[in-house]
Length: 235
Image 1 (cartoon, rainbow, N blue to C red):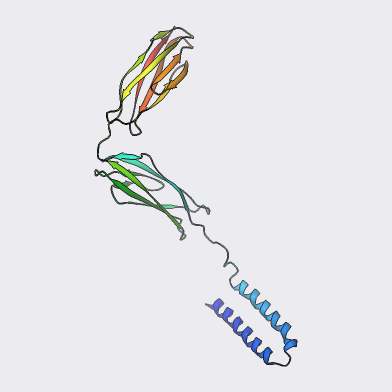
Image 2 (cartoon, rainbow, N blue to C red):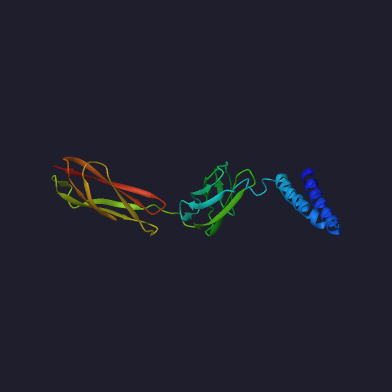
């Protein structure tokens, strides 16, 4: 309150001085003095509030909201990630809310338990830095009324179970999904040898070292994962 009063007083003094000087016959003499007073008063006002133009706090920024699964089966859960940053490196607090289901946990990563009703649900996240700065974002999640069933591997088949060093054999992972979901295949070589190629559910293995070697295939429908293995004998 004292600084505002000083600022008003300076402005009042300038106006009174200007009126007196204009009416005076010594106008030309007092003109430089008035300029000096105005310059001094401007400097004084800068001293009154020298940091008015400085940003004291930068608000946080939410770079992305990421859900682990694009479609969630009713009654199941999925993880939600909030990727936020703060230019001041302030401690960030995360406030989650949703119009359906339940949120478990706190912080930048939470688990959302989906309701059983099939529809889109809105999930929100608000990030605050404790200094008045905040940011908000939201995403929509689709809940399927059907419980997702995992893929099923009928078997792991080879063109030859026993090969010599340097020979190859073809391995087929015969799998299907009861829900009709598209499947992804990941081949893992658990022992010495070489996977010449691996395309979807078919791979070719080359024996390098004699012995019993295990080749595994992970099958996923983007919700559940299963795997099968096959032992190849190299002589």
